[in-house]
Length: 502
Image (cartoon, rainbow, N blue to C red; front, top):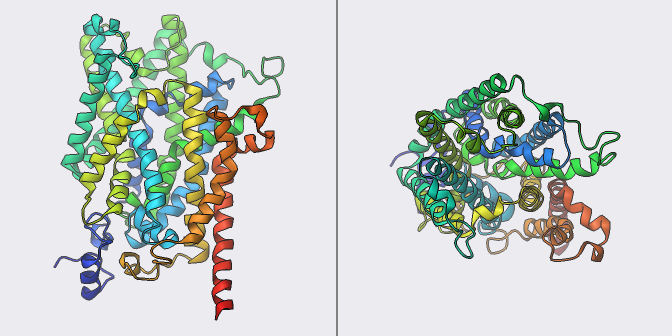
């Protein structure tokens, strides 16, 4: 029998392998398999952060009234904030070699862990669909340059996209599914290719824009709409905090499931330093490239082009178009698989470890990503930030607070590795569910619910007290703090109740 984990006896390893809560993809990673160093984690984040959504991320902030440096600084600050739970949640993955859904068992129970795992997985399915749509749409736009009649098609009823757009989306979706079938090594190869590819493409675009426009243009000299004498004077902070929450939501998903990657880390220093070097600066740099190039397009083309695909379409050289299309597709594919398939594949596998493998979990992710019609999620920039990004941060913030409270405060970074895979072990709680964690999750989500109902127009603003509606704009912060405190209070009350019964 091959070793599962160097710290376990052969009898314990045999017990793990026979458990209904075990499969090879959810197994703890052995010390010999942990080879990721600082450079690996920095490359991981450079690869995932350098993507088209990051390039376009500042667009809605600028449209909302910020100037360029306020938008880029907001993005940088949000990623410094989200880096904190990212590094903290990564600790258990590195120490014990466990993936995210197994990590959740300590706080939520062996069956209750499916609740945060599936909430995280469904968000990833939405992101998988969005990235797949972006990649497919890039193919469509480039093909339309070579064959203009494609751009003149009538949108299909109900779907609101044309047949050509749908076919390009499904084609790119099929490539994603093929990579899932190929497995983790193909994913690693894509990430290694992608990091320098999209950074290089971004810097080339930046250099071209500067040269052609004789500078970066009006957007970098445009004052903030919140400055004195401007249309939104004095309203900066009212806009800033919801925007910051939305930007935190961009990577709030990975701040939870980072154990899926940190389980391969050689040491805690490697994961912490690598992530710190790779995430905030890449997000700030790539969003700045997006702002600067877009600013130059106003001078070069006489219109504002936020989408890099739209910029590349203006090049007449067919070789440039094809190379750019391939680069964007590879880059989008790599980000999509790493950020939006690895975690939900493990999360869905956790539902039935003996029946669902990583590969099957990936297929489930792909199917849900299509059904969610991602082109509708990104159609409206305001809806994208203030509904999609903030709404799921209201779910993921509480989960992050509960996990960190459990692991760092309640358990003081000590887990029983074998018991995490035992159906009747110490993490079974009540029939596999930790009601303390589930109630804390519910309590932490509730403050953001009224504002969400207003945001999706299910309740009119005048029918909701202003204070309750405003809490939604701080959803991640409120949810994280309430979840953290409610969980610890619940644990202490649970212990006190057991003592009283004795």
